[in-house]
Image 1 (cartoon, rainbow, N blue to C red):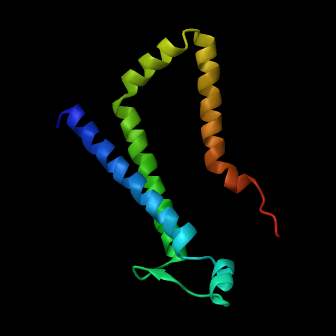
Image 2 (cartoon, rainbow, N blue to C red):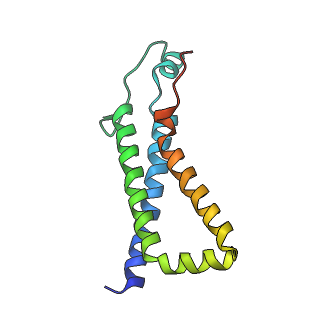
Length: 124
């Protein structure tokens, strides 16, 4: 398969996955109410289902769909790696500054993935 066709297919799948992520986020946030929100609306904690699936399971679906999107994004970047490198060099001509920005980008990326495991939750 030609690289351009593969890229179009990956981009189309990424778009659909992003739309699904948005939909599952809406289900979690606005449709299947949390325990406290269901108490406010119904006067008691109510178990709600969407397509026979509960809120916690939709969270798991949302998480794994996010992993799929991340995988597709990394695949997309890999297919465009030569272009990414060229554009990065054109954007930042100073090689030392380019390395600094790249290291900061990598550190920031890793932090954004692991910060939930570093920070301690508080009890309200």
